[in-house]
Amino acid sequence: MNTKLPCPYCSSLKGYIYVQSHYQCLNCKTVVDDCCNGEKEVSIKTNQFTDDRNKN
Image 1 (tube, rainbow, N blue to C red):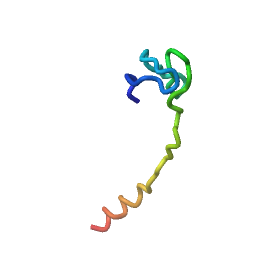
Image 2 (cartoon, helix red, strand yellow):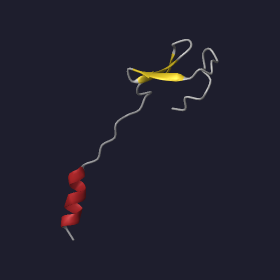
Image 3 (cartoon, rainbow, N blue to C red):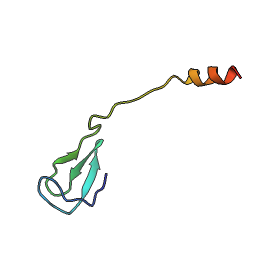
């Protein structure tokens, strides 16, 4: 996260601090970037790649 941006709630330029897996404004203490923000884990089967290599 770019910590040089102004806070979207109080417009402070003090910056953000990383606290318990999220960023919050140093001035108003409002959370500005939640921990996962809707991200999802993506996984692939690794044995699929080893099976393909063994065929050659």
